[in-house]
Image 1 (cartoon, helix red, strand yellow):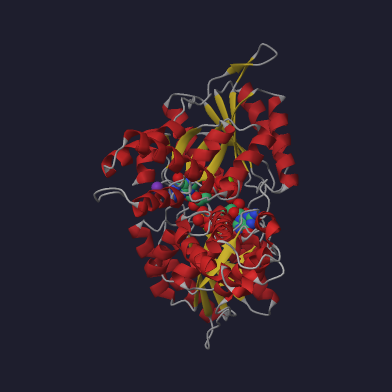
Image 2 (cartoon, each protein chain N blue to C red; image 1 turned 60 degrees about the vertical axis):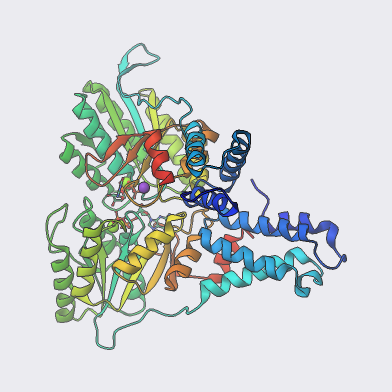
Length: 299
Length: 285
Ligand SMILES: Nc1nc2c(ncn2[C@@H]2O[C@H](COP(=O)(O)OP(=O)(O)OP(=O)(O)O)[C@@H](O)[C@H]2O)c(=O)[nH]1
Ligand SMILES: Nc1nc2c(ncn2[C@@H]2O[C@H](COP(=O)(O)OP(=O)(O)OP(=O)(O)O)[C@@H](O)[C@H]2O)c(=O)[nH]1
Ligand SMILES: [K+]
Ligand SMILES: [Mg+2]
Ligand SMILES: [Mg+2]
């Protein structure tokens, strides 16, 4: 495998210690190493361009050339910038002043929404809430059964008035789910929706209609950490089509470097709130910007 | 891409960006750019249209290196000299479209008048076997499944192949649970599924399902799955979205495993044979 960025940069700078200012060639090598590391991590091309421009500027500064170890200093600067972008505006989930709080899940096919619904259910329950999961994916074969199974595992009720598989109105299910929660005093409603593509106008409209029917307090965009450059286009499409208040990065238990975290943050400004780290109910944690930055930089 | 007059640095940057944005990867992009610059220099061309055509040519050579993209789905003769159904094992990371692809493939085979049986060897994910059963009903094919959640997936696969043989079917398609390639235990489990099947019938195909939205991690997926179960073909799903699926360019080249099918939607007819020219044109679009 490739040496990590720090190793490669250290090699570049070995001869350089105590030499003072970096030459133009040193800077170019540094910039291209960082560029490659970011591209290999699936960081969006425009973001990579902005980063390398910033690195080029700062590499010539005294802060770098006078450092004991210039390579480490540069990596530190990039790392800090990544943490800043990834961590800005980090916050807790927003709960409604008058329950029930409504959390809507949205994202591409197979991103991890239904699994997340179960995880959120278990987590909310653990925190003393009484959550209800709502089966508004009536599209994917047996999505309703799947939600029922994860709900059962989580010990959380599921509102599933329709069996799905192409039959039933997901907007109506979402609406009746929230009404049911209000009547029966569930204080948080998690609405699972079908996976959809950003380019599918009809399905994006459906998502907007579900949103309008339940007025969510949070709309969470679930994004697979393995996604490549399409993260930008897709995040933008969901931001425009449904709008979202937060991001959940899924499948972070894999070995993808996860540059998409940066893409979605820079394109939409929405904070990453949670990380999904496995297939089981408990594999769910808060998002850690510093860990993510190290991961992207392969440190 | 390249619509103005003579080429300058920003034109080159634009070309490079097109490739990077398609998830071709930094290494292969550098190589393509070098090759293209050399050819442009040799030909002395400054016509953007011509450069574009050259790039298309380079990519097409890279993508379509005369690989055999047919699927082995006809009954085979085993070591025992007896006829066996062709067995197709479908593998990949979580949520890429394995179960859906099994359903669509069954549809294709049924249309070719083949006798098909499905094996639900995903005994782990919630309602995975139900999902495959729904697909079986949709396309008119029987499904062998465990009678309980959490059953041994290898024994379900075994039962499916055995039933396929006893009933004289042509092809058995085995769906497996999604697994991330860095989970050694789950990869071992997959190896076991393959071994157990091969005790009953030669494994004709192992299809790795890659999601077109996947970035550079796709290469890792292909490497590790190939080591574990000897992948014979790739199915590139979700190409109906905005993602280009460029990672398969490096995957095909480095592992010599061809893309055999592409997934173009969630319906039973949304599976098509891989078409290199169409893929390259979409990539450059
Ligand atoms: N390893 C791992 N697998 C996950 C994670 N989250 C979800 N999965 C798996 O990913 C696959 C897809 O998850 P789902 O929850 O069905 O995804 P979805 O977004 O609801 O999919 P659609 O409803 O079809 O759009 C399943 O195999 C899940 O078990 C995660 O954090 N890590
Ligand atoms: N747009 C589109 N969606 C697809 C395609 N193939 C599969 N899907 C959808 O992607 C999601 C996941 O598909 P599955 O077939 O369940 O994926 P899987 O690999 O079996 O998932 P696990 O078993 O959980 O690992 C579902 O919502 C499918 O409808 C495709 O080619 N295009
Ligand atoms: K596409
Ligand atoms: Mg779902
Ligand atoms: Mg499946």
